[in-house]
Image (cartoon, rainbow, N blue to C red; front, top):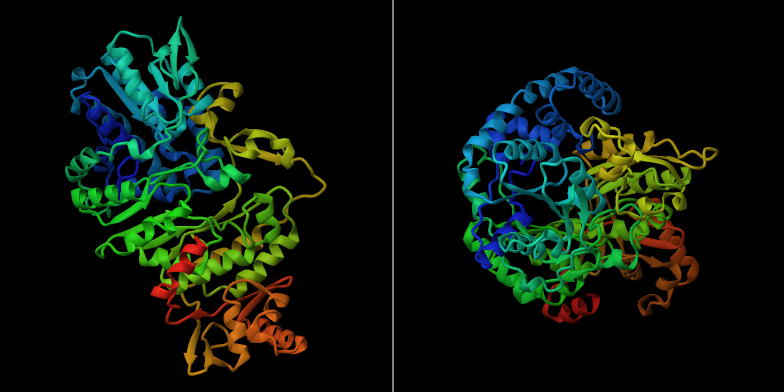
Length: 612
């Protein structure tokens, strides 16, 4: 249902479709979001789903009248408190939303008429982000028109306590699949087919004597190789029948689940994975088989991996094999930011053109508050290597962490100015408190108090506070220590906005000129200039391609003859010239090698393997 993505299929539904077919259970999947996009126009759909702030839940709010009936006072309060006050939407945007709302009821009528619902015994809805209210609105009308239908919900919005409370509040939902449903949903269907109670299946919320009851948690899928290749044929069918063909298509790919870093050191603000944090990955043979099948069957060359983090073993296994595949395929992956230069080069060679590296901050202290396991200069060196090897990093700059200081902002601003020529953040904003995150599990331990569902929730679900506490995924909060308020984020936000908008950032390149190196600097405001490095200076600057301490440099054989004062003077000069950055006693060269260093020469394969 809306507001599902139009450019890519649903991985969960694709897996379930294939799993049911494997089990001999007839199944069809409908991407009804295409019909809504056709009804309101592709530009309006993309505005709603991409441009409006998703935590305003405007897409969900559109369907509240279709679900609950007219609520003029609640609607007026939502427009004023959430859209006008919190998000500062102008009156033109408000009017646009109100006009689009008039399309919701006719769309639901279309859904009721366009699908032969009487042919089906069970109807399942997947719901993530802003899909809940539209899905519930259709489910309620379906149940009224076809009382014999057994309605099941699943997806991220229905995990754990959220699913239990939503099930309790909406009688039109017969059962909920909570957690990974690859095996539990087919097992639920088998139980229904055999006349058994849903209580015999793990990971299910169902009704017993009028009460919502949860069975024990669903077991994690341990062997990802045993899962079928997802069936995206219904998405292809519905997409081709729609008028949204101009939206570039992306093929979804899953090669791993969970987060190996989170299992070791759960980032304080991260609520991804819910109860399935344990990391599992497909074998390289199985992953490559799936990639080839999806490419040949759907003729789409861009793959977006849904993995929360790339399996580091793939640097030894899958990625070298992807690098040897015929050209044309490109990939998006989420990675950890402390990759080596060799690994970034291998990503590029394998066709990974875009990564989300989880940079999140340019302050060592804030990164420690997050438990990211990286440093500010490690983040910068990754941004540099991405530029060198043609990999685009998509990263967010977050602020407002409990314990954050004015010095953290000052350090960030100084580092930001030094790396202005590198890729700016893709987005920015205050840290959120999400369900399942350590912040949510024990807010008082992190200086958070008065934890409450985000402002839009009461306008989406007209229930009491206790109920909203169970339904919400996003929360607002106050800081315990009122005597030490967080620093004003205004200067930081203003600088980030300028960085993102600046299209004339210049470049800082490192060129070879015989035995010398030439640093070519055409960053504003200094304008074009060249700095020549001679002899041992070349070795010192090259060594700082990755983060080095002064003592570490002094111990290098190539610099053993250089006096301590001489080396310190050189490093000071590089920092003063803004061709190097320093954080305490750590140094990092900033110039981007042009052409890129040949990390993938045959002699470097062992180095790549060691780094992985």
